[in-house]
Length: 489
Image 1: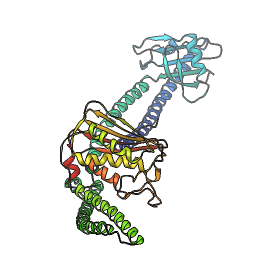
Image 2: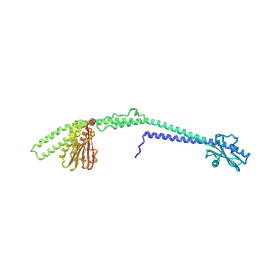
Image 3: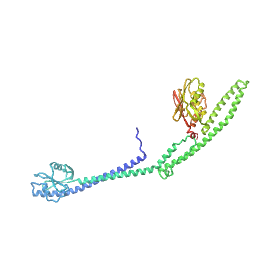
């Protein structure tokens, strides 16, 4: 599963806090190392001074008693610092001895293990760091006396370690507090800076939720002027979106105006064509009654009459679509869909006796509020479409079921299915399942468009699912045409 991408605010905060944290860590390391080196150099300088003194005291003690030099004797009566100083002496012919002065100025002899650790850590003439059991960390330095004695002097590193610990604690707390303050400040700053983008998103979302593909549409949503300040980068986005919405609103108004003009033209043209077509059909029928017409004239008049009937149907369909687009032509009254389905299937069965017809409706009537005549036309068009575009022997089933808010009507057939190339445009006007347009299947290509317009005029929906051997047209109708006003608009 892919990880959810971080938001721009999260990425900016992570980048700023991460970069500042890196800088603070580098500064803390450099400061700590520098301070540690400085403190150790100070301790080494103090250690060399103390080592020179203890070496001098040891030399004096060896002159007084060269056979037995004891560190406690060397330190006896001397002014020493009670800071944990350590002294160890080895001389030819003498027993090695060592002692440490505690902070209470008491002198304690070194154990054998501590003495061996001291000697093992001072092979170099430079100060060295050693960890002595029971004593902790020390800086040690060895001095050679004229009597070939080796005097090892040490000072504890406790103060350095304590200072470094306090320093690390202060740095850690200051860094943590600074990062928290930085995170809050950055979050507020970025949130305020991205507020125009959120306003752009909210405006675009409201516009996207509108139905812009039909009817009269006016886009009134705009990014607030406070969030569309062209003097800022994010404000430029809001200003650009407002300009775009202005252009889109103008284009939609122009489109709606052109559609209304075209709709009025189609309605007016269809209305005006009805009279001459009726005259052509009437004169052709009248002429056909003349028994003395030649055979070729009789055939020509029959063709004229057939084509005038076809033209009349086309004009009537165009006029109906124009009126439906204008939100007119539909009346509403209680309609029994169960009886409607039975009647339409009864009427359709004689038109295609080579098909197998099926009906699946409940015994109880299913009532909706709608235009009975137009709903008859919807079912008739769907059944005619299934009959026309399927071969003989195809089973066509009309079914009806009640739903929580209305009814669902299905027309199913087990024919060859719908060509995927035309499926998406199936409900468009003048769409044809026969892409060759050879007119072998007849019709004007307006039947499904009319069915869709009528269904949507009732606040319902119509859709199709098709695969070889399984094609279903599904019509959903609400019990009350609550969406009729919006669809008509």
